[in-house]
Image (tube, rainbow, N blue to C red):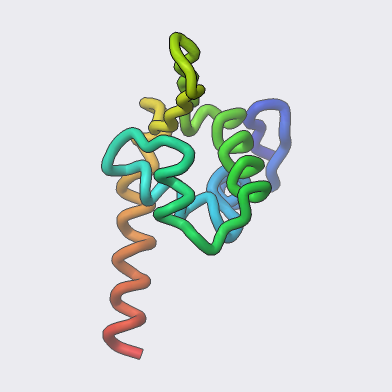
Length: 109
């Protein structure tokens, strides 16, 4: 058994998929690899995700320590930015590999 943030996983792959699995988490991480994005910028990059789903996935990624959320309240309107944490940056080679494999499938199958 593998434990992470109080959850138990039967193997290392299930732990990885528990953190980045699902339809939207890897897409979010892919867009954050290049740098910090505001919430609305993420919405523009991923127009087919609902606001509720995006918010939930961002919260899950933040809870797992993969992304950080920075809120600027000094002057209206409220500004929220998301970026990869140092821990999240360790996923970049994996996300790149997933993207490269997707490109391979499109070109060859």
